[in-house]
Length: 315
Length: 257
Image (cartoon, rainbow over all chains, first blue to last red):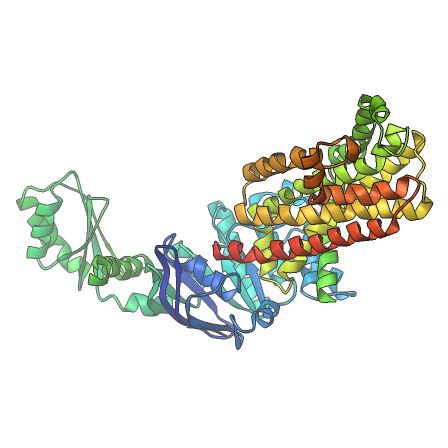
């Protein structure tokens, strides 16, 4: 449904996209996961025809984004990161206008607007000025706007940024429900690991303008063999602790905030006593130790971490 | 056709939003009257200098006030575009089949419609003050058209500045910078023979003056319709040019996305 091949884009000195490639299949919810500035939003902007890539090719529903932008625009819904609703219009007016510029008319137009207002749960506020909506209501309207003309592909750029945790979970339910109800292909970007884990069928981790790994959440976790051991130190001694850990076969993979060392071992439960006694005998004070099965968190750390350390980055 | 339909939908949206601001409506209606009454009183005796083609300064002034008001309104018309850019409304429309030209044109049409409404108000107030348009209904239409065209021509520039700079402060600076100089480099308030020679020459190239000449021509006796048509045509060409320029600046904006 979406094909992205080696897309590159540069803003002045910044290489925003450095050869992004991935594919999204029809009917799936696909996530682009990465930190701010990784190139997720730029990728979306290329796909929704807002901006051009310098190199590479991209197509949506079989239409090349560069050669047939209007064909792409007719089959996509785009929900930008920071809203895009007309604050001085009502929710219903916003939807009607969106439908009109997408070529809708007749009885279908008001009926579809009403249907969506109910679907996203803002029917009661439909005729109020958007300026007085809460953040959550506004986000729901954003999504309804993206769905107005029954697109085949929906792009959600950071759909839950700025929402409180409760509203965020509600939004996840909403998106999953909509994906089924409207038989949509969805591409969403997020920097919340949990969101990618819960919401997407498949995902790609984006870092420094590249896709570092792509697959289902379960596949990505399976790429990490063994358990993660997090050792939080009381104070200092990071270097000493690293040496001790390496000595007992728990070579450190990451250091977080200069006090927590993350190592990967085949069996966390069995390795733990040895790790603790080795640290104790070296006189290193430990605040806490935990063992965890691979999470998407670890996947992210693992893949972007390797990327950060790689030689291309140094070059 | 699609462009016309999209422009219409987008214009309706803007007009509707404006009508929701009661203070704005009051200003829209009152401001033109203030211009007409204040300037009309202040410079009442200036016609004694001669060359005005009429002894009634308010008759001389009224058609020019329509043009001046349209011009001032146009220099600010990019504000609404900046607001839409800031709130990503433009970004959302760019991902739909609505063309960039429709987006720009809807801003210009909204601005020109406002100028047309104000033109009617000014003409009605002028009528009450005793101003008689020599050429009747045709004259009224010419004056309103002159207002619309002067507004469109400068609204195009204002939209381009909005898209290029995307900053209200810059817009305000530019509006102030061109507003009064272009007003004084025209025959809006004073008859041509009373201007210094170099100003008379400069005024020939001033689009504000083109509008003033066309609209004043139909108010005073001895109307030269050729001159009216010529100046309106110049304004139409300039409007097309600036609207085209504003649309082309979308490329600069999109490069920033």
